Length: 255
Ligand code: CO8
Image: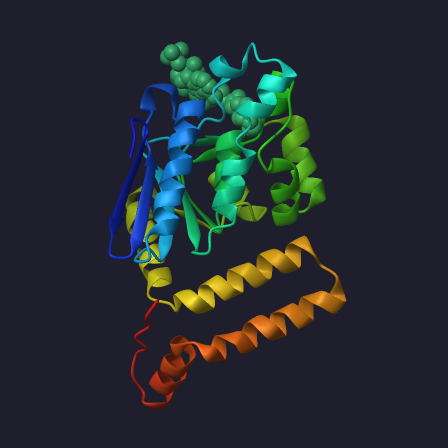
């Protein structure tokens, strides 16, 4: 896919990995541009039902500080990764961040833009931006409080300290923590489990959850849910899922 991003598609799962180990996978402009293109490729592939973002050793140590050090405000605006991370968050398929090692700053914001975060027991997470005289700028100020609540989000962002995988699990920042020995298998199992589900139902559930979080007007949320729920009865997966139950067999969903 590029020098720093690899995209491999196996059994309906797109495995997107960041490969810049010498800088602990720091997110340079080029890394993010390659990531953006890889997201487009995965989204355009009708065969892909799940996207996993992974890395070797470290998930991502944040935006590249060397590249940011001398930016003017205008240049900083152009450097921002927000639109790529919004693209990731807006993908129709379920997305998983497989976090090992450091996930800091922009690296953590990348993980926040995914639906699931599964962490290796040795992972270290945090938002150290404040220690650099800046703040999160690619989703951290809204995705983090939405996920873990305002008080904990402010604590992480204001203090900038790193937390362990166990602490991240306790505050709901990650869905699961796995030992190093089980980590890869657990990620693969989760991705396979998601890929066997109805893609249409997953996409509808994801879209409804996202829209209802963005626009939590009580009048609209339940209306939207009802309509999106009913629309699923037009597709083959609902018939297959229900008939499979009645015929006491496993469903075989098409996309
Ligand atoms: N940027 C650039 N280089 C980095 C980064 C980074 N974020 N992180 C690590 N590196 C490089 C180091 O410079 C070093 O390179 P070299 O060997 O050439 O000196 C190499 O990776 C290894 O790093 P260390 O020697 O520091 O290794 P340690 O094991 O001692 O520490 C840490 C590892 C804890 C990850 C440490 O490197 C560190 O604290 N890194 C910085 C983490 C950080 O502050 N991240 C936040 C950056 S700001 C941000 O992400 C803002 C997001 C806003 C997004 C919106 C627009 C972009």
